[in-house]
Image 1 (cartoon, rainbow, N blue to C red):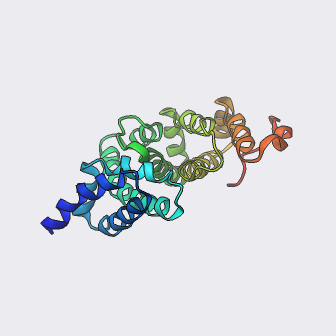
Image 2: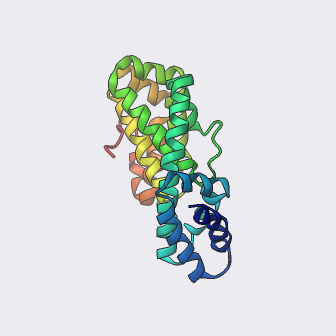
Length: 218
């Protein structure tokens, strides 16, 4: 076990190197190592999140796929720990803060953390209308609209996942009633969705710039 832990820093150092075949091999090895919690901690401690985020942009599809798998596994642990901590300390307020990225130090996995926080907000909104109102009291509907407006690419996998989770949360909040729908509209939620559609589908969605357009079922 000690030998494997000692090898992780070397694997990460090689993964940052210039050789594509070495990067692919290291990323594959880290996928297998990251399934164990003790290895996850070591990978994170040696800036593995940053290294794997860089490899996600590799020209080699296999390398990018392995790196993405490592990030997903690492994010599962770090996100669960951070979410539980925020939930205990701050409840819905903490989840909104996570959606906003406040106090999060996860490098390229920030979008993953935000995605899970949006999932948790959706679950809270499903429970009761009062929860929806509490989310809005902590400006959650504003944060969600801002996240949608910040989308710049229709191809980035992390961004696509985040956008989907944000839309789930916004849709659930809108379903609470006309008051909540009006509150979303007042902070630019409809305009944010139109922006999103334009990013994904281009100018063909210009006719959607109408105040009567509802939130899409994404």
